[in-house]
Each structure stands twice: as structure tokens, then as C-alpha cells.
Length: 448
Ligand SMILES: *Cc1c(COP(=O)(O)O)cnc(C)c1O
Ligand code: SF4
Image (cartoon, rainbow, N blue to C red; front, side, top):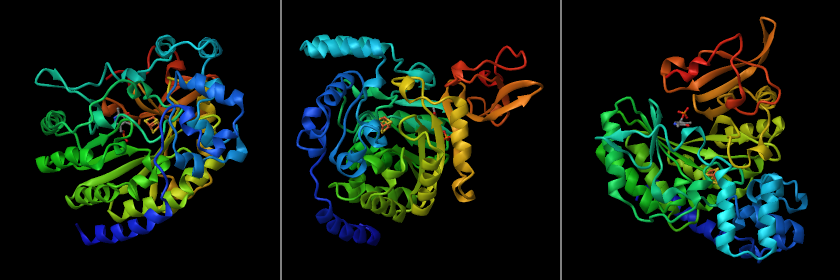
């Protein structure tokens, strides 16, 4: 153990006393009955949560309940809406169908059948997630891997397919069902290593999920050590996409393998590679607790860079002042604002979506309030079939009102950073709603 880790260890013992909270309990509201806050919900609110939670993912924990949600601001509190299923998240016909079953005491089989039917209508795999961008090695499809943009490969370790709490807007919810292996499998990372070796254009591997930091450190270390040991010259950066800082900062403080995790981070950094924690923060309150501040500071001590991203969503953060304050606080804490996304076309998008024009207005009103240090952020961005598409704005060109767009990522690197134009549509909430302007047949970003 390095000196730094020993210091961290001492800090950790002090923290143990400060935050000796019990672990979260997942899934059903009845599991949270011990929390006085939950008892303050009305019977109707509880019923709605139970009904919607049969279809959309629900899991919260004591940190979210005790430290993030303002229970004097129910039902409008942004973290409450982020974490607790709301009636409006199901379309009325879906809500009625499920409410009837629950009210009539239908059994699990019947309820799950109906839930699956509703889910199938919510397009669980947007942007060709499961059918495209699946690379193959020696004629076989690589398991748990997506490779869309030349430089960066996504890796979904099979044990990282869950999270410390679930976001109600999550587009990855299909992954949260079903049984998963909970052991490290060398057989899972070996082909990944060979694939990166055979594709020298890859500089980054991005561990994603779910939340890869939901895994025990031992499992994560299995994957990362294998990558470090392989010493692949083109692999320069390791990224970990995680919401643990927002939902469970104790992952870096008092969990029994928190110190091991930080030691693993140090090891990556001292190998000469860049380690970036792609942290998911949806609201300023997630950056305000003592626990998250301490966790950020411990992570930074390892030489890991934290970058932040979030979608913009109605009911949660559709307010430029929230974004400006969030970016500013991130800069102060030593995190780099990275992406503002537009809510994906899946799940409860109808509940969360803001129009492309509104997303752009929120982005620029926030961007105008912060100094250049926070303007590292790019947005608003759709992660869609043709790539990462940024809405640059609405303007009048040749007497036509248009959206000006550009691809920040595309399968064809040559398409990146070339502006393109779509007809203005006040209702458009996603790329698929857009039609090329000026009589063009097709957006060129779709040619790759
Ligand atoms: C967002 C994304 C990446 C990473 O893109 P960066 O711009 O490098 O952060 C990689 N692959 C896929 C499929 C993505 O959606
Ligand atoms: S943390 Fe990420 S993967 Fe987990 S529920 Fe939230 S959006 Fe989904």
C-alpha cells in the first residue's frame, strides 16, 4: 500500500464514525417503510409508485432519502422525481392497465406479463444499441462490447449491470432484469484485450453499465489489471462511467473495499495512463453533501480526473440556473463539465423530454453565466443513430427557419464538426423528428 493510501485509510476511519449508516435496500417501497420520510407520502402517492415501479426500474437508498431529497418539497423535488417512479411516467393507458392489476391483487406472473408488454412498447434498445456497433473477433461477436467511434470502445462487464439507485429516466433498464453472473471472468476480458490490440485506432476503453462501480473492487480490479498487464501501447485512457458519486459516495469512503478502489485508481494513473471517472450528476444537490465533497477529493488525490455529464430533463433540471450552478460547483470541486445530453427516445421520454429548441435555450442561458473554465461542456447533445449530434441553435438561413446541428462523434470521422441543417420544428424532441432543410434527401451524417 502506498503512503497516499495509508493517509486515505486514516481518513476513512474517521469517516466510518461520521457515516455509519445502514446499507440501502432495493426494489419495493415496503422495503423503505422504516424511513419516516416515506411514511409522509400519501396512500395515493404510494400506490402510484408501486404501480409504475412494476414497469420502470425503482431502487433508492438511505443516502438518497436522507441527504438528497428535500421532503418538504414533495412531490416537486427533483431528486424525488429522479428516483421515485411518478404516475405521469407511464402513458395513461399503460398506467390504467397496471393499476387495475395491482388493485385486483393480480399475481406476479400476470403483472410481469403485462409489464413486459408495456416495456416492449417503450423501445428498450434505442440507437441500435443491441443490434449495431457490435464488433467481432475471429468471426465471433464480442460479448459485452460496443465499438462505434474509432477511438473509444465501450465495455459492459457483466457484473456491472446494476446501480446504487435507479434513475427513473434510465434507458438501460432492460439490463436490470434477469440473472447475472457475479464472478470475474477472465474469458470476458481476454477477447477485449485482443480486439484492442488488433485495432490500434482505439485509445480509450470506457467501462459502462449499469454502473461499473456497483461491482466489488475485486471484480473491477480483475478487468483493469488484465488490461494493464497486457500493456497495450495504443490504450491510453481508461474511463469509468458511474453515478456512484451522486448516489453512493460511500463507495469511495466507507465501503469495505473503498480504499482498494482508490488504490486501483492510483495504479492506473501510475501506469502512465489517463483515468477518467465519467460522473453522472443530474442536479446541484448531488454536489452539496459532505460525503460527495470528501469522495471527490479522495478520488482527485489518486490523480484521477473527474468529468461530468447529465441529460437535461423536465421536472428535474430544465432550468439554466441549475446547470450554471452545477457547472460552477463542479469546477470548484475539481471536476470538468463534459456533456449535456438530450433525454433519449426510450422509457418515459414523454414525461422528461424538452424540445430541442428548449434544450438549446437552457444550454446557452447556462453557458452564458459561467466563465471559460466551465465552458468545457458541450451540448445539448443527442446520442443517436448517426452519432453524437449537437444542437448548435435555431436560425434563419435563406428565408428558412432551421436547426443548425453538427456531429461531435460519427462512425465516419470525416463527418465530424461539419454543420448541417434541419427544418425548424417547434415540437421536435429527438433526431428522428428532424427533416433535412433546403430540399436535401438525407443528412450526410447518416453516410458512414
Ligand atoms: C458517447 C459515446 C462514446 C464516448 O464518446 P466521447 O465523445 O469520446 O466521450 C463512445 N461510444 C459510444 C457508443 C457513445 O455513445
Ligand atoms: S445510474 Fe445510469 S445506468 Fe444507473 S439507473 Fe441511473 S441512468 Fe441508469
